[in-house]
Length: 249
Image (cartoon, rainbow, N blue to C red):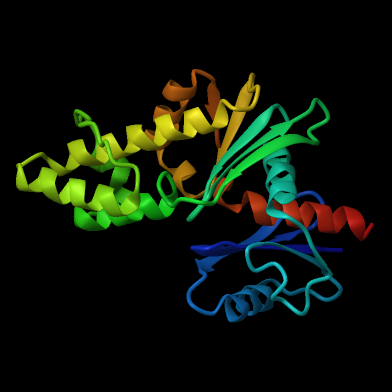
């Protein structure tokens, strides 16, 4: 027996195939301009006969084959707890939003905050700045090694672009600018997250969780232990699949 979880995000669509114990297959693709078609493609790649399918994320209602649609808050909490059952909260930085999810002792959702009003402090914000610096986001850790951060005062994406262009014109190094962006996002994330009574071990998920420089900066700003996982970008899809398996057994 299998379940499929698909998380339709603003930047990427993630899907996993779950057998009740392990994640046995994963798919991640750019969402693109047609999220419905993207979800269908991910579903076809993961399809197994009689697999119960749960969808989540922005496009969760778009897949006809979905057996159930569940909010991303619920799925992210469930998925992070599946990957690490010692956590007390989840900080997720997505392509266009950020979330903080507080869990109780039984790993159920106790409270949450979501910021989807501004792209600043999200994965898209980092992509924009790295594109200006003509560097690949996947190389960010290497790029900022030993760099001295310069303060980025603008946290609106549009104004930050102008600020970065101005800094480059002043011969400020690209790595220093990138390190400044990382620290600005970390401070913004910590300020947002601390509206909830966080303590203990915090799980960091989303695409930026793959970057050690971002994880370390958030840990420093939050003054709490931050953990992540190689599958942290898939937590929404994993949570959806875990919920789907439980509902179908």
